[in-house]
Image 1 (tube, rainbow, N blue to C red):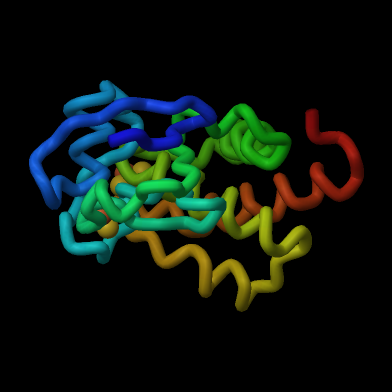
Image 2: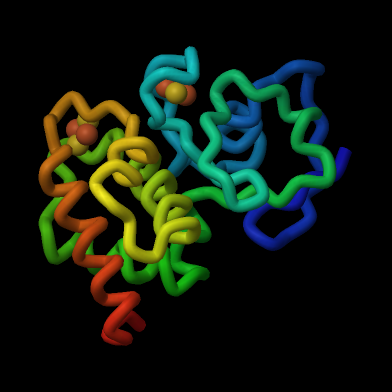
Length: 155
Ligand code: FES
Ligand code: FES
């Protein structure tokens, strides 16, 4: 079967029902997407499917046929992604870092939908869990990235 991942067509072969998360990590060496809960609860495994933030730990890869999949490895291919990376650095967001690729992917989908997200938009989009409690810095970095995208200072 063929999948569209990070702008490339990938031929994949895996047992039926294999979650996309494990296809990415084990078969395609795209290990930036993390395993946390395995139950679509924590957000560590967030990727984009046709631009929407999607938790892929319980998503059979066959369901992605014809869809556009983007992982953290391609975050810097978009202006929003680059603005988020810069903001994450400026705000020194990560602590252990484990949840952060999922956080960034959720934030990128949020900013693609809401250029100036309200507190409610952020709250609704950012339900990812962080055991290190980086939530205030995540929020600050999203605001910083949104501002940079608005005022043209983002690369
Ligand atoms: S590992 Fe997928 S949501 Fe937690
Ligand atoms: S930075 Fe450690 S779990 Fe979020």
